[in-house]
Image 1: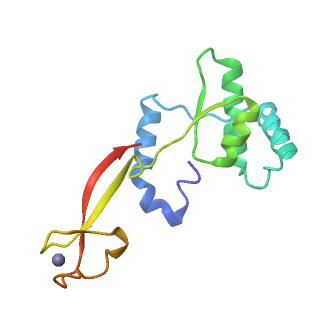
Image 2: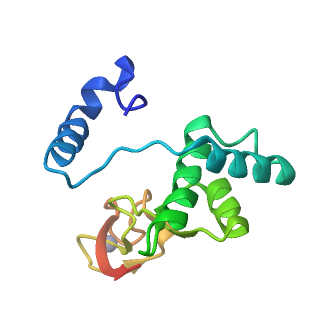
Length: 148
Ligand SMILES: [Zn+2]
């Protein structure tokens, strides 16, 4: 929450902050801090693997909370992260994790390059060139989308 409220990004994050606050009010989201003994386990492990420098205090605290929840809740606990260093440490601490996909990389798009006049297909690397037959600027169009 503190990271979202940084003055520099407050305008950009206003929407997500409102949604988080709503989720807290309605009990869908619980904000919790890990007990020291659990974040200490993460801290120690990250020291022994040399990832201390790349993990922020919040990263360590978050992973500590996951360990605490694994210890105190019967449900499967999953950490959502795109951080490679965290994933690495999760593996060593036997924490289950899943990636968070950002919008836009959920599908891969393929384009083809063609001449809008003579309709010939051209090589993708020629996109910014002109058609050799009619001299028009080549264009690209969506060929297919592939779910990732
Ligand atoms: Zn052409």
